Length: 145
Image (cartoon, rainbow, N blue to C red; front, top):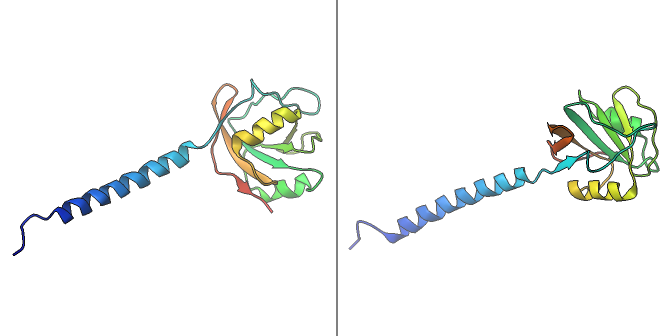
């Protein structure tokens, strides 16, 4: 004899709803993982001056001039916004086209790398202005070859 209402159906539907809620929460967590960076608190330098961001969106390119050529790497990036080229070897060159070479002291570079969880160079990602000199990571980090 079968019962009209089974607790198996109740637990199955509860389990299904819990799985959907868990997937939604995980997706929201992964998206909120993008980091903020304030250029007022951490100083970067161009060839002659302190870097003050002016564009609303930048593509950040992290590389090492000891290992890679910035022009070759930048040519692989198909971006309409200016490129902030941060050399981990700390060499700076004059601005060419839309490539802005910036550098900083080792402590600032380490904080920047840790903030964005960079594990490989060269890599690139976009940052977008939130307020004044506060920027938020807008895309995932893309490892370049």
